[in-house]
Amino acid sequence: MSETYTAGLSDEETARLIMRLAEWGLIYDSVLVWFSQVEFDTREIDSLMDTPSAGRRREKHKFALPEGHKVSAIAFMNPELIGALGSDPRRAKRFLGLLFDYVLPRDSNWKETVTVECSCGSPHTLLPCEWLALLKTKKWVPVRKGDEESEDYEPQAASAQNLEELLGDGLNEIIREDDNIQLLKHLGFNTLELQIRRRSEGDKTREESIRDQLATIVAQASEEDLGILETIVGSEHELSTIVDIANERLKTRIVVRRNKEFGEAIQAIVEQIFHNLAFDIVPVYKGYDFDAYYKGDVEPDDLGSIELEAHDLLYLVEVKATRENEVRMTEAQAAIAVSNSDRYVLCVVDLGGKDLDQFGNQEEFKGAIKDSIFIIEGIGTKLEPVVATQQVSSAKEIEVEFVGRVRYLIRHSLWAREGNSLTVWIRERFHTD
Ligand SMILES: [Zn+2]
Image (cartoon, rainbow, N blue to C red):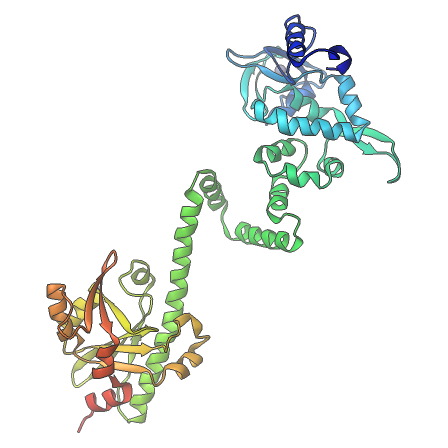
């Protein structure tokens, strides 16, 4: 409302004046106005529907809204106002500011369809939003005529290109709101492009990496997978939960691969010792599978087991790496150790304070741990009373730990005192004299 009408009036008097004028139908008291009947031409009505009406181009579509619904419109949005936007970029930008900041949060008609019975004889399912139809079908975006210096503008129909030109860096601010992105889609933008722009915040390297990540997903996932992913993303909290689970599984796969590689390194060391001592024994390595690690049936530092057959006895050598002063045995491992105490052997690989992840490859690992492998026989006998009573062993070298599940902690002092080097153990145990 022009200030000439309200000059000299207090705010209260102005408000009362506006109310009266609105009551008499002389002015609108709000930017948004609502109608229960409306008439569109075919182009306009098509712009509000997913599937075109199949009506003739000049046909009129007149309909009343069903009970409880109205068509939203922007006050004074008539051919003159639209024409005024198209010749003046500042005015067009102000209008867009009003649209994004005021209209979108107060009007949901531009995103919720309703089905109407139309004068053309067909029912239509459409967005009951007049301003949207006008923005999508009229020429209202000011585009510079001639060279860059020119102050002469002509109105064009909205497109991603001319709106991007008009808004400049202001677009970055606008696309922080999901609703704004949805509206820009109606005006010719690609939502994926806008989401990438929002996420990368103008950083070209980040943008490139997001595109690469998306390309991998599109290449690898089936359409069905993508549909499921979309549903997951749409439901609150699900995405982060599922990503956590997927990440856990991925980490487990890496552990399985790493431990197999290092377990085979231990087997190679054992084999070399047998070879050097001229024993005719072939060590057989068995790694743990994905489920064993994933379900926690074994520890992440468990490198698998090695089977050695000699003197009609099959030795089970359980290989555990540790960076600290203890190794942990699971309940299942303890049970096997107890019931096979004459042939279950614990093999501790002391990593000297390092993590398994810190070894680059098999050779580096072999070189680093060659002299830090300890063999403990009869661990089952020592475990038996601890398993039975769930009390710490008398020598305090085996403890029971309960953090969600039971673990038996074997202390460093035990293998420091009773452990043998691999060579000594093999020479003594497999001697044939
Ligand atoms: Zn119709």
